[in-house]
Image (cartoon, rainbow, N blue to C red):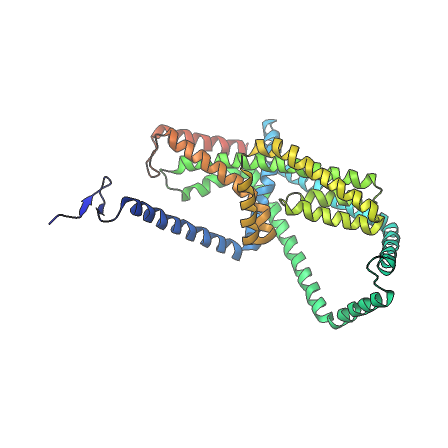
Length: 392
């Protein structure tokens, strides 16, 4: 009787009755299942502690944005702790200045905006009454009466919504403070924190994974820097356009566009809808159409010039990967997922490319292969140099 069991090259017993392709597919399948289960567990854990994980993720993005400035100050002999504090102070001043300027402009223009809004509302009512829709004033009054009755009958629901909004504001402020503190320590002691976390990585694979993580971090910094420039140009273009057509809240429109530009695809659409609606209410239909054309022009500038030259050079990600990343992120975590999807994809693509390149340079070494002492020593020297720069 012929023995159907043989020993393969790795020393494992195999069955000749099972096709080699099926064995390969089975090996890939259980590995993919384990990885998917691990990702699901991590995602579930992060979702359960979202009040901590989201501020930490925001802190990483802010750190990537401020990292070039911190390194510039460190190269000019500014102590790393002082450089971290100056970066954080600059961030607070810029964000606080934008919101202060927006609030001051809205407060100063409020009487004019109120008059324009009332006049526009009357024009809309006249158009509904005498326009092609032929909605009479009696019907409009009936709709308004229904809205008032709904509001009176839903006072408890509205109060619960207001209470939930107040609680949300409190959580937002708490998360903001946590994100700012985390940003300071990430900038100040990023190298030490990374080395402390790296002890969880097996010793044999540690140098390769740390090298790939550095490449991913470089790509993330480049992406965030390019994204800030693109958002600034979008906000500047929208603000200048609103000022040209005579809007009294041009700064607010520019600031809103700048903030929402960090949300891929959906952010520009939301900013455009809000801005056009504000112009429609305050300045009328014609200028609202002009504002819409301005937004279309700004978006065309972004998609055909800024993104290819800035984002394309920062990270080489296929547009399909960007679209799929945004879709998956929005399905899993809504707007927050869409916001962090592309940075995560940028880091992951750079990490995977660097790791594959490192393995190919090492002669396709196995992941658990122990690196030689010279490589390990060079890696340790790099970590020591980073710690020296961080504490100098």
